Image 1 (tube, rainbow, N blue to C red):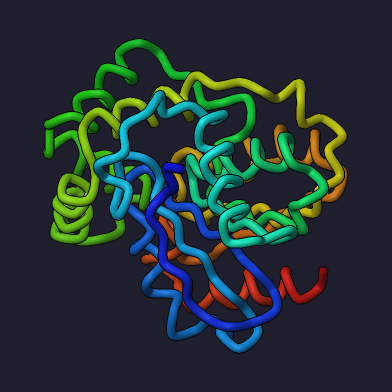
Image 2: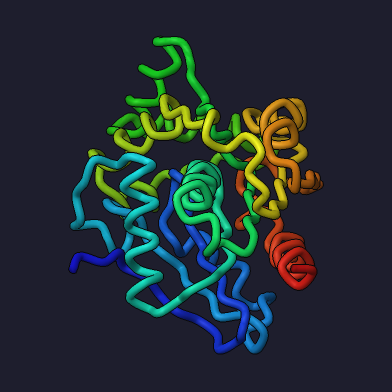
Length: 254
């Protein structure tokens, strides 16, 4: 059976599956590791198809495929129930897993997440993003700068883009772009009672508080909203201490 590449860290009773964002693989969570209680948690850091340890795995790059892949891995590890942390596009994937396997998901921490209705954009914006995903480093760097409120030096964006190219395939990058832009399963989530913490970045260009209130808080009765002050779209890199603490506090309430 084909399984996603992954890394297990920790030995705690609470099991947490981490899914990464579009512009990095699972190592994007490395800044959190010094601040996670690994005696309380067992953390499973997963690489989606076309990224990181799964870079050689091709697929359709759909939300249904990603949900199925995650559950196959959980089954292989004999994880019956677990929490999910999903960042950006994987915030959408986490929601799909809850739709498909509601009894197994104890809670979700959705970090600057894409909503279940997707984030459709005009054709010129999609053309820009496809160029950024496939080969245009200037466009990709501009995207990082925009998502973080133009608050960092250009080298931050360059470093992120350089690693994005190394850790993933162009096919996967473009495929997942269409996943979070064009997928809509919002009709399936309305009323879903899974407990959820939705974190938006104070300086995030896309995942604004207004968007989160119009989608997550409208459709999920057990969702709560929290602002990550000092961060844009990438809290794992920008504010790792805050994010690790927010995850721990929320999960330990469950």
